[in-house]
Image 1 (spheres, one colour):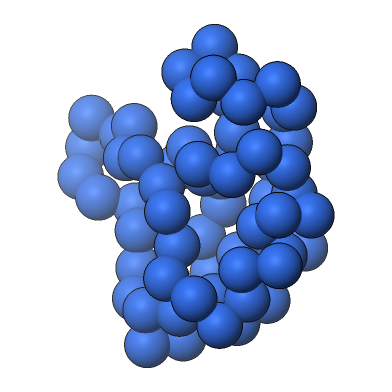
Image 2 (cartoon, rainbow, N blue to C red):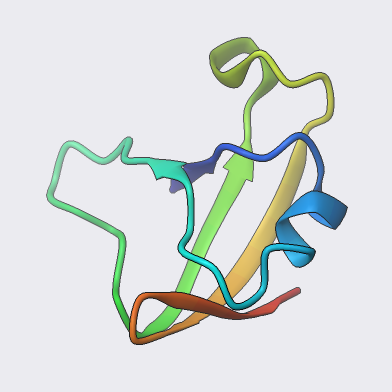
Length: 68
């Protein structure tokens, strides 16, 4: 699961149309995809942001298309 570097899910949704800011956590290869659906969360103990959230992000050509 990717770690999204956003303070809240609302802030992530406000970034639609922009590149995703994230950290890879998998030991088995990259999870990030330029196009398609990816899953991730914000882990406060790792990012320093106060709010924990989980999200499904649809990417298209390296830009955020949808957040749910």
